[in-house]
Image 1 (spheres, rainbow, N blue to C red):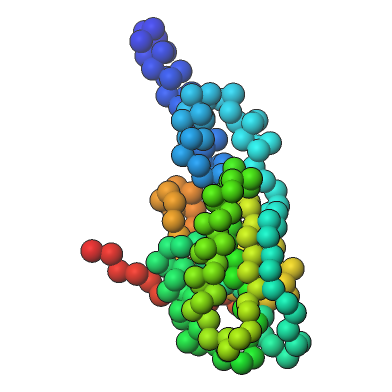
Image 2 (cartoon, rainbow, N blue to C red):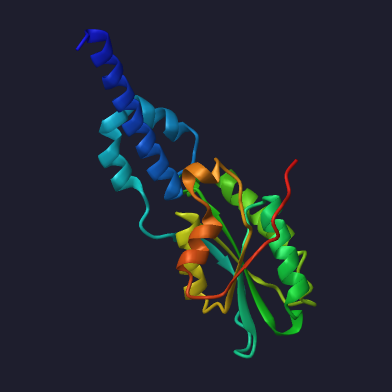
Amino acid sequence: MPDVLVATLVVLTWLALGAASAVYLGRHGRRHPGWYGVCLALGPIMLPIALEMAPRHGELVRRVGAALPDTHRTVLVAVDGSRESEDALRDAVLDLPAETTRFVLLTVLDPDLHDDPQARADAEVLLAACAAQLPLEGRDPVVETATGNPAQVILERAAAEGADLIVVGRRGRGLSQRILGSVADHVVRNSPLPVLLGPERVTT
């Protein structure tokens, strides 16, 4: 086999294993663009590192909200600032009776942004904007910021809050869902609870 062909196969294999590491990290919540360059550069060396770095469980960073009577239905709404999550929140507001619904608004940060003050501040602004859309007549919703794999965190927080329903956008921000997988698809497939998806957006 010519040396050029061998070298080409080695390079392609190296890049493929690096890309696999990047996808694995992305599917587990680490979607910072810098990781993709690192993974491609380190190739197969990155595989065990990616397996170690991928968070197994989410971590709750901030939670604000008071308990409400047990007669209230608890609805967890995952928001990420995308138009799709805005649509899902709007539909939840229209479809659910505000007087008997306990809303939990959740946003999930990349684990790499866990200690980033700006990321936390942006999350608080996002949650406050979403809370302002809820017709709760003086009752504040529960607002939560967490880090980890978004789909896994949504399921974990829904269980922790005793949710009766999960609301999530069909798609979110970030890289193509074909590469990293759809958070909504994972939640729908794995949730023991009913899941309300936002409407499908038509792109032109």
